[in-house]
Length: 216
Image (cartoon, rainbow, N blue to C red; front, top):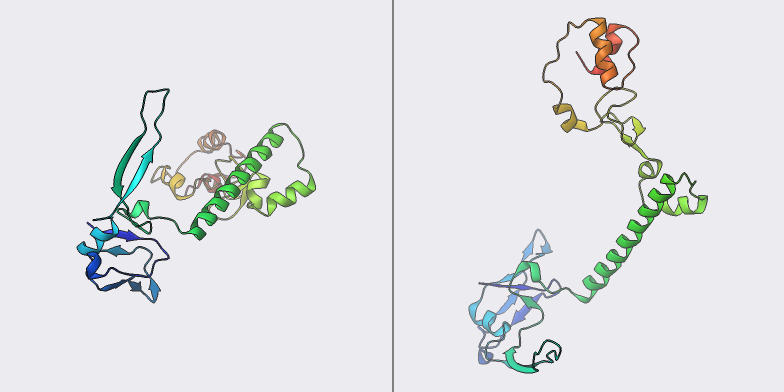
């Protein structure tokens, strides 16, 4: 077993008289910076920090509606700067403020996205000041409803193939879905049929249509 320290705690020392080992434990340093996670592996100090030998009175008010009576229990007074698991490491005051602010901004951005989608669906033009505000927080391509192919060509969002180079918009994964080896000897009619199936132009020479289909 071990304990995990809060991120702003740099050292701890539990006197022998209190049940600790008396040694000062410090946060490890890796590559010139304090380790993000500090695990304290010292049984005497761990027992003390978990509340060994110390108790406090905890009051449970109960609930008359469900028939639960008020109770009092003596429980260990665990140090608030330590936790038994990495997932439950206590947050510092700065971390709490930062996370609260990020959650607030995230909720605001989600509301902006919903409003933008609703306005687009209703065919309403986004006012200039509102668009300026959106552009400060989102990639302009998202606001324009465009995306890029693997070669960097801009296309309308939802396009399956690039209108410039005919490459699949899904990038490598989409390309991997294509047959590993396309036959090179195809008739003009077959090339036109394949172009139509993929929503590509079906005119031009055989070489041009093969290029659109990505056939060598």
